[in-house]
Length: 578
Image (cartoon, rainbow, N blue to C red; front, side, top):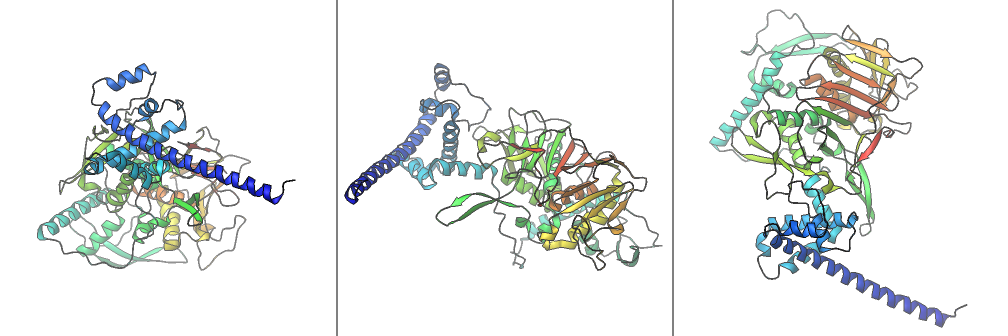
Protein backbone atom coordinates (compact mmCIF):
# COMPACT_ATOMS: atom_id res chain seq x y z
CA UNK A 1 0.00 0.00 0.00
CA UNK A 2 1.36 3.46 -0.96
CA UNK A 3 2.31 5.84 1.82
CA UNK A 4 1.43 9.57 1.89
CA UNK A 5 4.70 10.58 0.21
CA UNK A 6 4.09 8.18 -2.68
CA UNK A 7 0.47 9.27 -2.99
CA UNK A 8 1.56 12.92 -3.11
CA UNK A 9 4.06 12.09 -5.83
CA UNK A 10 1.36 10.28 -7.82
CA UNK A 11 -1.00 13.24 -7.37
CA UNK A 12 1.68 15.62 -8.63
CA UNK A 13 2.21 13.41 -11.68
CA UNK A 14 -1.57 13.39 -12.36
CA UNK A 15 -1.71 17.17 -12.07
CA UNK A 16 1.25 17.58 -14.42
CA UNK A 17 -0.37 15.33 -17.04
CA UNK A 18 -3.72 17.12 -16.63
CA UNK A 19 -1.97 20.46 -17.18
CA UNK A 20 -0.26 19.05 -20.25
CA UNK A 21 -3.56 17.70 -21.56
CA UNK A 22 -5.27 21.05 -20.92
CA UNK A 23 -2.52 22.92 -22.78
CA UNK A 24 -2.75 20.48 -25.70
CA UNK A 25 -6.57 20.86 -25.79
CA UNK A 26 -6.27 24.65 -25.76
CA UNK A 27 -3.62 24.51 -28.47
CA UNK A 28 -5.74 22.10 -30.53
CA UNK A 29 -8.83 24.31 -30.18
CA UNK A 30 -6.81 27.38 -31.17
CA UNK A 31 -5.42 25.56 -34.20
CA UNK A 32 -8.90 24.37 -35.23
CA UNK A 33 -10.26 27.92 -35.12
CA UNK A 34 -7.35 29.12 -37.25
CA UNK A 35 -7.82 26.24 -39.71
CA UNK A 36 -11.52 27.04 -40.10
CA UNK A 37 -10.76 30.74 -40.69
CA UNK A 38 -8.03 29.95 -43.23
CA UNK A 39 -10.22 27.33 -44.94
CA UNK A 40 -12.98 29.87 -45.35
CA UNK A 41 -10.78 32.53 -46.96
CA UNK A 42 -9.05 29.89 -49.11
CA UNK A 43 -12.48 28.82 -50.38
CA UNK A 44 -13.39 32.41 -51.23
CA UNK A 45 -10.32 32.62 -53.43
CA UNK A 46 -10.57 29.13 -54.91
CA UNK A 47 -14.20 29.45 -56.03
CA UNK A 48 -13.22 32.33 -58.33
CA UNK A 49 -11.05 29.97 -60.40
CA UNK A 50 -13.39 28.43 -62.97
CA UNK A 51 -13.60 24.63 -62.57
CA UNK A 52 -10.80 24.48 -60.00
CA UNK A 53 -12.85 23.26 -57.03
CA UNK A 54 -14.82 20.75 -59.10
CA UNK A 55 -11.56 19.33 -60.45
CA UNK A 56 -10.15 18.97 -56.91
CA UNK A 57 -13.34 17.26 -55.73
CA UNK A 58 -13.16 14.78 -58.61
CA UNK A 59 -9.46 14.07 -58.05
CA UNK A 60 -10.13 13.34 -54.37
CA UNK A 61 -13.29 11.28 -54.99
CA UNK A 62 -15.42 13.80 -53.12
CA UNK A 63 -19.07 13.62 -54.14
CA UNK A 64 -21.85 15.80 -52.75
CA UNK A 65 -25.38 16.86 -53.47
CA UNK A 66 -25.48 20.12 -55.40
CA UNK A 67 -28.63 21.86 -54.19
CA UNK A 68 -27.79 25.15 -55.90
CA UNK A 69 -27.28 27.03 -52.66
CA UNK A 70 -24.13 28.50 -51.22
CA UNK A 71 -24.16 26.85 -47.84
CA UNK A 72 -22.94 23.34 -48.73
CA UNK A 73 -19.41 23.48 -47.36
CA UNK A 74 -19.14 19.72 -46.76
CA UNK A 75 -16.92 19.07 -49.82
CA UNK A 76 -14.70 21.97 -48.74
CA UNK A 77 -14.36 20.47 -45.26
CA UNK A 78 -13.52 17.04 -46.67
CA UNK A 79 -10.90 18.64 -48.92
CA UNK A 80 -9.28 20.76 -46.21
CA UNK A 81 -9.55 18.13 -43.44
CA UNK A 82 -8.72 14.87 -45.28
CA UNK A 83 -8.37 12.80 -42.09
CA UNK A 84 -12.11 13.12 -41.35
CA UNK A 85 -14.19 10.20 -42.60
CA UNK A 86 -16.78 11.02 -45.26
CA UNK A 87 -19.85 10.36 -43.08
CA UNK A 88 -18.34 11.65 -39.86
CA UNK A 89 -20.61 14.07 -38.00
CA UNK A 90 -17.57 16.35 -37.79
CA UNK A 91 -17.95 17.11 -41.51
CA UNK A 92 -21.49 18.30 -40.84
CA UNK A 93 -20.44 20.37 -37.81
CA UNK A 94 -17.50 22.06 -39.55
CA UNK A 95 -19.75 22.73 -42.56
CA UNK A 96 -22.19 24.55 -40.27
CA UNK A 97 -19.32 26.50 -38.73
CA UNK A 98 -18.18 27.68 -42.17
CA UNK A 99 -21.79 28.61 -43.00
CA UNK A 100 -21.94 30.79 -39.87
CA UNK A 101 -18.57 32.37 -40.74
CA UNK A 102 -19.86 33.08 -44.24
CA UNK A 103 -22.94 34.81 -42.86
CA UNK A 104 -20.80 36.87 -40.51
CA UNK A 105 -18.47 37.87 -43.34
CA UNK A 106 -21.36 38.96 -45.55
CA UNK A 107 -22.96 40.97 -42.75
CA UNK A 108 -19.74 42.80 -41.74
CA UNK A 109 -17.40 42.78 -44.73
CA UNK A 110 -15.71 45.99 -43.61
CA UNK A 111 -14.35 44.21 -40.52
CA UNK A 112 -12.42 41.77 -42.66
CA UNK A 113 -10.97 44.14 -45.23
CA UNK A 114 -7.54 44.12 -43.57
CA UNK A 115 -4.44 41.87 -43.24
CA UNK A 116 -5.52 40.57 -39.81
CA UNK A 117 -8.80 39.09 -41.08
CA UNK A 118 -7.78 35.56 -40.00
CA UNK A 119 -7.36 36.70 -36.40
CA UNK A 120 -10.64 38.63 -36.54
CA UNK A 121 -12.49 35.49 -37.67
CA UNK A 122 -10.71 33.46 -34.98
CA UNK A 123 -11.95 35.94 -32.39
CA UNK A 124 -15.49 35.67 -33.84
CA UNK A 125 -15.37 31.86 -33.51
CA UNK A 126 -14.03 32.01 -29.96
CA UNK A 127 -16.49 34.68 -28.76
CA UNK A 128 -19.43 32.61 -30.03
CA UNK A 129 -18.40 29.41 -28.25
CA UNK A 130 -16.40 27.62 -30.91
CA UNK A 131 -17.91 25.12 -33.34
CA UNK A 132 -20.84 24.30 -31.02
CA UNK A 133 -21.64 28.00 -30.64
CA UNK A 134 -21.51 28.54 -34.41
CA UNK A 135 -23.96 25.64 -34.83
CA UNK A 136 -26.37 27.50 -32.54
CA UNK A 137 -25.93 30.66 -34.67
CA UNK A 138 -26.96 28.62 -37.70
CA UNK A 139 -30.00 27.22 -35.90
CA UNK A 140 -31.08 30.66 -34.70
CA UNK A 141 -30.63 32.19 -38.16
CA UNK A 142 -32.63 29.49 -39.93
CA UNK A 143 -35.06 28.09 -37.38
CA UNK A 144 -35.25 30.72 -34.64
CA UNK A 145 -38.10 33.08 -33.88
CA UNK A 146 -38.47 36.22 -31.75
CA UNK A 147 -38.39 35.52 -28.02
CA UNK A 148 -41.70 33.87 -27.11
CA UNK A 149 -41.20 34.13 -23.38
CA UNK A 150 -41.91 37.85 -23.15
CA UNK A 151 -45.63 38.58 -23.09
CA UNK A 152 -46.84 41.70 -24.78
CA UNK A 153 -47.49 44.44 -22.27
CA UNK A 154 -51.12 45.31 -21.77
CA UNK A 155 -50.22 48.88 -20.88
CA UNK A 156 -51.14 51.35 -23.55
CA UNK A 157 -48.14 52.90 -25.21
CA UNK A 158 -48.11 56.32 -26.77
CA UNK A 159 -47.85 55.96 -30.52
CA UNK A 160 -46.12 58.56 -32.59
CA UNK A 161 -48.42 60.80 -34.57
CA UNK A 162 -48.54 59.72 -38.21
CA UNK A 163 -47.85 62.14 -40.99
CA UNK A 164 -50.81 63.02 -43.17
CA UNK A 165 -49.59 60.75 -45.98
CA UNK A 166 -48.93 57.87 -43.59
CA UNK A 167 -52.35 58.28 -41.99
CA UNK A 168 -54.03 58.20 -45.41
CA UNK A 169 -52.07 55.07 -46.35
CA UNK A 170 -53.00 53.37 -43.06
CA UNK A 171 -56.69 54.16 -43.51
CA UNK A 172 -56.54 52.91 -47.11
CA UNK A 173 -55.06 49.62 -45.88
CA UNK A 174 -57.71 49.30 -43.18
CA UNK A 175 -60.47 49.80 -45.76
CA UNK A 176 -58.96 47.13 -47.99
CA UNK A 177 -58.83 44.62 -45.13
CA UNK A 178 -62.39 45.51 -44.11
CA UNK A 179 -63.60 45.05 -47.71
CA UNK A 180 -61.91 41.65 -47.88
CA UNK A 181 -63.57 40.39 -44.68
CA UNK A 182 -66.93 41.95 -45.56
CA UNK A 183 -66.96 40.17 -48.92
CA UNK A 184 -66.57 36.76 -47.27
CA UNK A 185 -69.16 37.52 -44.58
CA UNK A 186 -71.74 38.60 -47.15
CA UNK A 187 -71.18 35.37 -49.10
CA UNK A 188 -71.51 33.26 -45.93
CA UNK A 189 -74.59 31.10 -45.41
CA UNK A 190 -74.41 31.86 -41.69
CA UNK A 191 -75.18 29.46 -38.88
CA UNK A 192 -78.75 30.50 -37.98
CA UNK A 193 -81.67 32.45 -39.46
CA UNK A 194 -83.98 34.63 -37.35
CA UNK A 195 -86.99 36.76 -38.24
CA UNK A 196 -86.33 40.09 -36.54
CA UNK A 197 -88.81 42.09 -38.60
CA UNK A 198 -87.84 45.23 -40.48
CA UNK A 199 -84.36 46.27 -39.33
CA UNK A 200 -82.19 49.02 -40.72
CA UNK A 201 -78.90 47.84 -42.29
CA UNK A 202 -75.75 49.31 -43.81
CA UNK A 203 -75.15 49.66 -47.53
CA UNK A 204 -73.55 46.20 -47.33
CA UNK A 205 -76.77 44.85 -45.78
CA UNK A 206 -75.04 44.29 -42.43
CA UNK A 207 -76.45 45.00 -38.99
CA UNK A 208 -75.02 44.29 -35.54
CA UNK A 209 -77.42 42.59 -33.13
CA UNK A 210 -77.14 42.32 -29.37
CA UNK A 211 -78.67 39.16 -27.91
CA UNK A 212 -78.92 37.40 -24.59
CA UNK A 213 -78.93 33.65 -24.01
CA UNK A 214 -81.20 31.77 -21.65
CA UNK A 215 -79.18 29.50 -19.37
CA UNK A 216 -82.20 27.27 -18.91
CA UNK A 217 -83.23 26.73 -22.54
CA UNK A 218 -80.16 27.91 -24.45
CA UNK A 219 -82.39 30.04 -26.70
CA UNK A 220 -81.30 33.49 -27.88
CA UNK A 221 -83.38 36.65 -27.51
CA UNK A 222 -82.51 39.72 -29.61
CA UNK A 223 -82.55 42.86 -27.47
CA UNK A 224 -80.89 45.62 -29.56
CA UNK A 225 -79.41 46.45 -32.95
CA UNK A 226 -77.16 49.09 -34.49
CA UNK A 227 -75.80 50.12 -37.88
CA UNK A 228 -73.23 52.53 -36.46
CA UNK A 229 -70.31 52.37 -38.91
CA UNK A 230 -67.57 52.13 -36.27
CA UNK A 231 -69.36 49.35 -34.40
CA UNK A 232 -70.12 47.39 -37.58
CA UNK A 233 -66.48 47.74 -38.73
CA UNK A 234 -65.19 46.61 -35.34
CA UNK A 235 -67.43 43.51 -35.39
CA UNK A 236 -66.45 42.65 -38.98
CA UNK A 237 -62.76 42.96 -38.11
CA UNK A 238 -63.16 40.88 -34.96
CA UNK A 239 -65.43 38.15 -36.32
CA UNK A 240 -64.67 38.15 -40.02
CA UNK A 241 -62.35 35.65 -41.64
CA UNK A 242 -59.90 36.66 -44.37
CA UNK A 243 -61.05 35.87 -47.91
CA UNK A 244 -58.23 33.88 -49.55
CA UNK A 245 -59.82 33.62 -53.00
CA UNK A 246 -57.59 36.37 -54.44
CA UNK A 247 -54.45 35.33 -52.58
CA UNK A 248 -51.63 34.15 -54.90
CA UNK A 249 -51.75 30.33 -55.07
CA UNK A 250 -48.31 29.67 -53.56
CA UNK A 251 -48.91 32.02 -50.62
CA UNK A 252 -52.39 30.59 -50.10
CA UNK A 253 -50.93 27.06 -49.99
CA UNK A 254 -48.44 28.03 -47.27
CA UNK A 255 -51.14 29.75 -45.22
CA UNK A 256 -53.64 26.91 -45.52
CA UNK A 257 -50.96 24.46 -44.37
CA UNK A 258 -49.95 26.67 -41.43
CA UNK A 259 -53.43 27.74 -40.35
CA UNK A 260 -54.27 24.85 -37.95
CA UNK A 261 -51.01 25.53 -36.08
CA UNK A 262 -51.20 29.26 -35.40
CA UNK A 263 -51.84 30.73 -31.98
CA UNK A 264 -55.56 31.65 -31.63
CA UNK A 265 -56.46 35.30 -32.12
CA UNK A 266 -57.86 35.63 -28.58
CA UNK A 267 -54.54 34.50 -27.07
CA UNK A 268 -52.71 37.02 -29.27
CA UNK A 269 -55.06 39.73 -28.01
CA UNK A 270 -54.40 38.79 -24.40
CA UNK A 271 -50.66 39.18 -25.04
CA UNK A 272 -50.06 35.57 -24.06
CA UNK A 273 -48.68 34.09 -27.29
CA UNK A 274 -45.43 33.20 -25.51
CA UNK A 275 -47.31 30.94 -23.08
CA UNK A 276 -48.99 28.91 -25.81
CA UNK A 277 -46.05 26.55 -26.38
CA UNK A 278 -44.63 23.95 -24.01
CA UNK A 279 -40.97 24.21 -23.01
CA UNK A 280 -38.44 21.37 -23.03
CA UNK A 281 -35.16 20.85 -21.25
CA UNK A 282 -32.31 20.60 -23.77
CA UNK A 283 -29.31 20.78 -21.44
CA UNK A 284 -27.82 22.16 -18.25
CA UNK A 285 -26.11 25.51 -17.68
CA UNK A 286 -23.28 24.73 -15.26
CA UNK A 287 -22.48 28.41 -14.70
CA UNK A 288 -26.05 29.46 -13.89
CA UNK A 289 -26.74 26.04 -12.32
CA UNK A 290 -30.08 25.64 -14.01
CA UNK A 291 -31.71 23.77 -16.86
CA UNK A 292 -31.54 25.19 -20.38
CA UNK A 293 -35.12 25.40 -21.63
CA UNK A 294 -36.32 25.93 -25.17
CA UNK A 295 -39.96 26.35 -26.29
CA UNK A 296 -41.65 24.25 -28.94
CA UNK A 297 -42.09 26.03 -32.24
CA UNK A 298 -44.01 25.20 -35.38
CA UNK A 299 -41.93 24.20 -38.38
CA UNK A 300 -43.13 23.84 -41.98
CA UNK A 301 -41.19 21.42 -44.19
CA UNK A 302 -41.70 21.04 -47.94
CA UNK A 303 -40.55 17.52 -48.73
CA UNK A 304 -38.89 16.25 -51.89
CA UNK A 305 -41.90 13.94 -52.49
CA UNK A 306 -44.17 17.01 -52.79
CA UNK A 307 -45.93 16.71 -49.41
CA UNK A 308 -45.84 19.41 -46.73
CA UNK A 309 -45.22 18.47 -43.10
CA UNK A 310 -46.08 20.86 -40.26
CA UNK A 311 -45.53 20.01 -36.58
CA UNK A 312 -43.74 21.28 -33.48
CA UNK A 313 -40.00 20.93 -32.95
CA UNK A 314 -38.71 19.38 -29.70
CA UNK A 315 -41.90 17.35 -29.42
CA UNK A 316 -42.20 13.59 -29.86
CA UNK A 317 -45.92 14.01 -30.57
CA UNK A 318 -47.88 17.15 -31.43
CA UNK A 319 -50.58 18.32 -33.78
CA UNK A 320 -49.10 17.13 -37.08
CA UNK A 321 -50.50 17.93 -40.50
CA UNK A 322 -49.50 16.28 -43.75
CA UNK A 323 -50.74 18.17 -46.79
CA UNK A 324 -50.74 17.00 -50.41
CA UNK A 325 -50.70 20.06 -52.71
CA UNK A 326 -52.78 19.95 -55.87
CA UNK A 327 -49.83 21.63 -57.60
CA UNK A 328 -46.74 20.30 -55.80
CA UNK A 329 -43.68 22.50 -55.33
CA UNK A 330 -40.61 21.02 -57.03
CA UNK A 331 -37.68 21.05 -54.60
CA UNK A 332 -34.32 19.21 -54.82
CA UNK A 333 -34.43 18.09 -51.18
CA UNK A 334 -36.49 18.58 -48.02
CA UNK A 335 -36.56 22.30 -47.17
CA UNK A 336 -37.94 24.27 -44.22
CA UNK A 337 -39.51 27.70 -43.97
CA UNK A 338 -37.25 30.02 -41.96
CA UNK A 339 -38.56 30.42 -38.41
CA UNK A 340 -38.68 34.22 -38.46
CA UNK A 341 -40.66 34.16 -41.70
CA UNK A 342 -43.16 31.64 -40.34
CA UNK A 343 -43.61 33.82 -37.27
CA UNK A 344 -44.13 36.91 -39.46
CA UNK A 345 -46.74 35.13 -41.59
CA UNK A 346 -48.68 34.20 -38.44
CA UNK A 347 -48.45 37.49 -36.54
CA UNK A 348 -48.60 40.02 -39.38
CA UNK A 349 -50.33 38.44 -42.38
CA UNK A 350 -52.83 36.35 -40.43
CA UNK A 351 -53.34 37.73 -36.92
CA UNK A 352 -53.03 41.40 -37.97
CA UNK A 353 -54.93 40.56 -41.19
CA UNK A 354 -52.40 42.19 -43.52
CA UNK A 355 -52.72 39.39 -46.10
CA UNK A 356 -55.08 41.27 -48.50
CA UNK A 357 -52.36 43.92 -48.92
CA UNK A 358 -49.76 41.44 -50.17
CA UNK A 359 -48.86 40.06 -53.58
CA UNK A 360 -45.93 37.78 -54.32
CA UNK A 361 -43.41 36.95 -57.03
CA UNK A 362 -43.70 34.33 -58.42
CA UNK A 363 -47.35 33.69 -57.69
CA UNK A 364 -47.56 29.94 -58.21
CA UNK A 365 -44.26 28.43 -57.02
CA UNK A 366 -41.06 29.21 -55.13
CA UNK A 367 -38.12 30.84 -56.87
CA UNK A 368 -34.51 29.73 -56.56
CA UNK A 369 -32.80 31.79 -53.88
CA UNK A 370 -30.52 34.61 -55.00
CA UNK A 371 -26.95 33.45 -55.60
CA UNK A 372 -25.63 35.48 -52.67
CA UNK A 373 -28.02 33.76 -50.26
CA UNK A 374 -27.55 30.52 -48.36
CA UNK A 375 -31.18 29.49 -48.81
CA UNK A 376 -32.45 27.00 -51.39
CA UNK A 377 -35.71 28.77 -52.31
CA UNK A 378 -37.33 32.14 -51.70
CA UNK A 379 -40.60 33.98 -52.23
CA UNK A 380 -40.76 37.74 -52.71
CA UNK A 381 -43.70 39.42 -50.98
CA UNK A 382 -44.75 42.88 -52.09
CA UNK A 383 -47.02 45.34 -50.26
CA UNK A 384 -49.54 46.59 -52.79
CA UNK A 385 -50.06 49.81 -50.84
CA UNK A 386 -46.53 50.86 -49.86
CA UNK A 387 -44.47 48.94 -52.41
CA UNK A 388 -42.22 47.57 -49.66
CA UNK A 389 -40.85 44.08 -50.25
CA UNK A 390 -39.82 41.18 -48.04
CA UNK A 391 -38.34 37.84 -49.02
CA UNK A 392 -39.21 34.68 -47.14
CA UNK A 393 -36.58 31.94 -47.32
CA UNK A 394 -36.45 28.16 -47.33
CA UNK A 395 -33.37 26.20 -46.22
CA UNK A 396 -32.25 22.60 -46.52
CA UNK A 397 -33.39 20.73 -43.40
CA UNK A 398 -29.96 19.11 -43.00
CA UNK A 399 -28.56 22.56 -42.19
CA UNK A 400 -30.19 22.60 -38.74
CA UNK A 401 -30.04 18.85 -38.06
CA UNK A 402 -28.86 18.23 -34.51
CA UNK A 403 -29.96 16.60 -31.28
CA UNK A 404 -32.64 19.25 -30.69
CA UNK A 405 -33.95 19.84 -34.21
CA UNK A 406 -36.42 16.96 -34.49
CA UNK A 407 -40.16 17.25 -35.01
CA UNK A 408 -42.85 14.54 -35.12
CA UNK A 409 -44.19 12.87 -38.23
CA UNK A 410 -46.58 9.95 -38.54
CA UNK A 411 -45.15 6.43 -38.49
CA UNK A 412 -47.85 5.01 -40.76
CA UNK A 413 -51.19 6.29 -41.98
CA UNK A 414 -52.71 2.79 -42.01
CA UNK A 415 -54.55 3.27 -38.72
CA UNK A 416 -57.62 1.44 -37.48
CA UNK A 417 -60.16 3.81 -35.91
CA UNK A 418 -62.79 3.12 -33.27
CA UNK A 419 -65.18 5.78 -34.48
CA UNK A 420 -65.75 8.06 -37.47
CA UNK A 421 -67.86 11.14 -38.19
CA UNK A 422 -68.48 12.25 -41.77
CA UNK A 423 -69.60 15.79 -41.09
CA UNK A 424 -70.91 18.59 -43.21
CA UNK A 425 -69.70 22.13 -42.66
CA UNK A 426 -72.88 22.97 -40.74
CA UNK A 427 -72.17 20.28 -38.13
CA UNK A 428 -68.56 21.45 -37.72
CA UNK A 429 -69.78 25.01 -37.31
CA UNK A 430 -72.28 24.05 -34.59
CA UNK A 431 -69.68 21.94 -32.77
CA UNK A 432 -67.20 24.81 -32.85
CA UNK A 433 -69.63 27.44 -31.56
CA UNK A 434 -71.20 25.26 -28.89
CA UNK A 435 -68.08 23.54 -27.54
CA UNK A 436 -64.69 24.71 -28.85
CA UNK A 437 -65.36 28.44 -28.76
CA UNK A 438 -67.07 28.10 -25.39
CA UNK A 439 -63.98 26.37 -23.97
CA UNK A 440 -61.61 29.06 -25.25
CA UNK A 441 -63.79 31.95 -24.07
CA UNK A 442 -64.41 30.22 -20.75
CA UNK A 443 -60.77 29.76 -19.85
CA UNK A 444 -59.46 32.90 -21.56
CA UNK A 445 -56.14 33.92 -20.03
CA UNK A 446 -56.23 30.84 -17.76
CA UNK A 447 -55.81 28.40 -20.67
CA UNK A 448 -52.63 27.08 -19.03
CA UNK A 449 -54.47 26.07 -15.86
CA UNK A 450 -54.00 22.40 -14.96
CA UNK A 451 -57.73 21.76 -15.39
CA UNK A 452 -57.50 23.11 -18.94
CA UNK A 453 -54.90 20.55 -20.01
CA UNK A 454 -57.27 17.85 -21.36
CA UNK A 455 -60.59 17.48 -23.14
CA UNK A 456 -62.45 14.40 -24.34
CA UNK A 457 -64.09 13.65 -27.70
CA UNK A 458 -66.89 11.27 -26.68
CA UNK A 459 -68.90 9.89 -29.61
CA UNK A 460 -72.40 8.48 -29.44
CA UNK A 461 -74.70 7.10 -32.11
CA UNK A 462 -76.26 10.53 -32.66
CA UNK A 463 -73.84 13.06 -31.17
CA UNK A 464 -70.31 14.32 -30.55
CA UNK A 465 -69.72 15.37 -26.96
CA UNK A 466 -66.81 17.55 -25.88
CA UNK A 467 -66.12 16.88 -22.19
CA UNK A 468 -63.85 19.20 -20.22
CA UNK A 469 -63.22 20.86 -16.87
CA UNK A 470 -64.90 24.11 -17.87
CA UNK A 471 -66.84 25.06 -14.75
CA UNK A 472 -70.51 25.99 -14.81
CA UNK A 473 -73.05 26.88 -12.13
CA UNK A 474 -74.71 23.48 -12.44
CA UNK A 475 -71.67 21.16 -12.51
CA UNK A 476 -72.98 17.57 -12.62
CA UNK A 477 -69.98 16.15 -10.72
CA UNK A 478 -66.86 14.30 -11.83
CA UNK A 479 -67.27 11.48 -14.36
CA UNK A 480 -65.12 8.38 -14.91
CA UNK A 481 -62.59 10.33 -17.00
CA UNK A 482 -62.25 13.07 -14.40
CA UNK A 483 -64.26 15.69 -16.29
CA UNK A 484 -66.70 18.09 -14.64
CA UNK A 485 -68.33 19.53 -17.75
CA UNK A 486 -70.31 16.91 -19.68
CA UNK A 487 -73.82 15.82 -20.46
CA UNK A 488 -76.51 17.17 -22.78
CA UNK A 489 -75.17 20.75 -22.78
CA UNK A 490 -71.89 19.47 -24.23
CA UNK A 491 -73.39 17.37 -27.01
CA UNK A 492 -73.60 18.45 -30.64
CA UNK A 493 -76.47 16.40 -32.04
CA UNK A 494 -76.59 15.06 -35.59
CA UNK A 495 -79.23 16.88 -37.65
CA UNK A 496 -78.95 15.27 -41.08
CA UNK A 497 -75.57 17.02 -41.31
CA UNK A 498 -73.34 14.15 -40.16
CA UNK A 499 -73.05 10.36 -40.29
CA UNK A 500 -71.49 8.55 -37.32
CA UNK A 501 -69.96 5.08 -37.49
CA UNK A 502 -69.00 3.24 -34.28
CA UNK A 503 -66.87 0.10 -34.29
CA UNK A 504 -68.29 -2.49 -31.86
CA UNK A 505 -66.35 -3.60 -28.78
CA UNK A 506 -64.15 -0.50 -28.87
CA UNK A 507 -64.05 2.67 -26.79
CA UNK A 508 -65.62 5.57 -28.62
CA UNK A 509 -63.65 8.36 -27.01
CA UNK A 510 -60.34 10.14 -27.59
CA UNK A 511 -58.79 12.44 -24.97
CA UNK A 512 -56.51 15.16 -26.31
CA UNK A 513 -54.83 18.42 -25.31
CA UNK A 514 -57.13 21.41 -26.06
CA UNK A 515 -54.34 23.57 -27.49
CA UNK A 516 -53.77 20.90 -30.16
CA UNK A 517 -57.28 21.23 -31.60
CA UNK A 518 -58.47 24.79 -30.85
CA UNK A 519 -57.18 26.50 -34.00
CA UNK A 520 -57.80 23.44 -36.18
CA UNK A 521 -61.54 23.49 -35.45
CA UNK A 522 -61.64 27.29 -35.57
CA UNK A 523 -60.23 27.05 -39.07
CA UNK A 524 -62.62 24.28 -40.12
CA UNK A 525 -65.61 26.32 -38.92
CA UNK A 526 -64.56 29.69 -40.35
CA UNK A 527 -62.13 29.22 -43.21
CA UNK A 528 -62.74 28.35 -46.85
CA UNK A 529 -62.70 24.59 -47.27
CA UNK A 530 -63.60 22.78 -50.47
CA UNK A 531 -66.65 20.55 -50.57
CA UNK A 532 -69.02 20.00 -47.69
CA UNK A 533 -67.41 17.10 -45.87
CA UNK A 534 -64.90 16.87 -43.06
CA UNK A 535 -63.99 13.43 -41.70
CA UNK A 536 -63.15 13.10 -37.99
CA UNK A 537 -61.87 9.76 -36.71
CA UNK A 538 -60.30 8.55 -33.51
CA UNK A 539 -59.10 5.80 -31.22
CA UNK A 540 -57.24 5.70 -27.92
CA UNK A 541 -53.97 6.78 -29.60
CA UNK A 542 -54.83 9.52 -32.06
CA UNK A 543 -57.49 11.88 -33.41
CA UNK A 544 -57.50 12.32 -37.20
CA UNK A 545 -59.22 15.06 -39.22
CA UNK A 546 -59.33 14.97 -43.04
CA UNK A 547 -60.35 18.00 -45.08
CA UNK A 548 -59.68 19.78 -48.36
CA UNK A 549 -58.91 23.38 -49.27
CA UNK A 550 -58.44 25.09 -52.63
CA UNK A 551 -54.74 24.27 -52.72
CA UNK A 552 -54.36 20.85 -51.05
CA UNK A 553 -55.87 17.89 -49.25
CA UNK A 554 -54.93 17.78 -45.58
CA UNK A 555 -54.61 15.12 -42.88
CA UNK A 556 -54.32 16.38 -39.30
CA UNK A 557 -53.19 13.99 -36.55
CA UNK A 558 -53.61 14.93 -32.88
CA UNK A 559 -51.97 12.60 -30.35
CA UNK A 560 -54.20 11.28 -27.60
CA UNK A 561 -53.20 11.77 -23.98
CA UNK A 562 -52.16 8.82 -21.86
CA UNK A 563 -53.23 8.21 -18.25
CA UNK A 564 -50.57 10.63 -16.96
CA UNK A 565 -51.71 13.41 -19.28
CA UNK A 566 -48.75 13.10 -21.68
CA UNK A 567 -49.14 13.03 -25.46
CA UNK A 568 -49.00 9.44 -26.69
CA UNK A 569 -46.23 9.11 -29.28
CA UNK A 570 -46.92 5.47 -30.28
CA UNK A 571 -47.89 6.47 -33.85
CA UNK A 572 -45.25 9.18 -34.29
CA UNK A 573 -41.56 9.12 -35.14
CA UNK A 574 -38.90 11.83 -35.05
CA UNK A 575 -38.23 13.59 -38.35
CA UNK A 576 -34.80 15.21 -38.89
CA UNK A 577 -33.36 13.65 -35.77
CA UNK A 578 -29.57 13.78 -35.49
